[in-house]
Amino acid sequence: MKLLSIAIPSYNSEAYINKCVDSLLAGGDDVEILIIDDGSTDKTGEIADKYAIMYPDIVKVIHQENGGHGAAVNAGIEQATGLYFKVVDSDDWVKESAYKKILETLKDLIGGNTVLDMLISNFVYEKEGARKNKVMKYHHALPKDKIFTWDEVKHFHKGQYILMHSVIYRTKLLRECGLKLPEHTFYVDNLFVFEPLPYVRTMYYLDVNFYRYYIGREGQSVNEQVMISRVDQQILVNKLMLDYLVEKKPEICRYRKMRNYMTNYLEIITVISSVLLIRSGNDENLEKKRELWDYIKQKDILLFMRLRYGIMGNSMNLPGKGGRKISVESYKICRRFFKFN
Image (cartoon, rainbow, N blue to C red; front, top):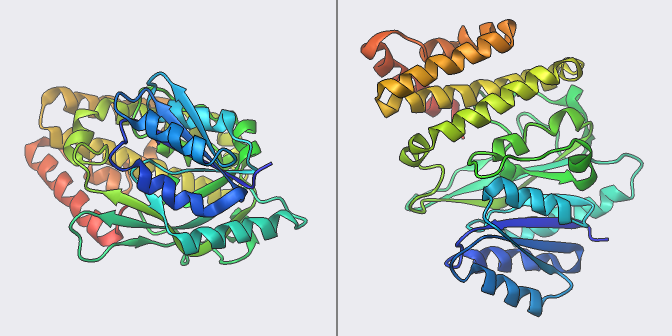
């Protein structure tokens, strides 16, 4: 059995997948690299197959019909043989020194008395054209270099959360929690770092800059105009997160800090949905914003009150054209002040 399985969801990635895979090969025989060719129409599949031939004990290729990022992650979870599981997108890469530190840490923890559910590390925004890259760290919120529980988690900055780039899960936990991401849907990485949390009891934070998250590729899903064009998928993920929080409320409420963390995460996702709908500037999307907030109200009135009448919820629901302009500017100010991801 491998120590760590790394899934690489790949769609038409021929221009950059080599950099990703090459950075992961440094893990050697401790690692299983699963390249999921998600119905690519370029040479991604051929490149992946060559790696499998060159490194048969490390690289495995899964060819499947196009199902989107969620389907590729699902396939990775199903096929993984490693004790732990990580997703690395095909246009991203990892830093070798931090990578080896993570593998050493996982090895050491396996021999202990406590089973580790989730390891967290830092990630770096590799932004095209930026003079200085931003590092997302968690040392203010999480104890370092020790196994800890939710009771020991401190306060996260507003708008800062543990993202897909930050986490390594115990593989069996992902299967036990029944995680199944929706297909043909963007932004499902939010579900990946949300739905398993009620099953996470033990965590470990390693303060190393491991994951390099590339931003700047044309057509990238996090580009604002692209996000507006796909806002229905953002709303779908938003509602799925809400549904899950309501469904799991009895279990989540047993851990106050987990409940607060998950509620705050849902809040920022809802604010992002709202501001995208406002910025689109059309009446149809403004109606979708009203429908989204009504959906929250019908699902859980107390949760609605917390989200709607907090600072950000209030700022997203100011009346009229002038109010909507203030909403967008308020969001920009909050994003700069709180350093949103």
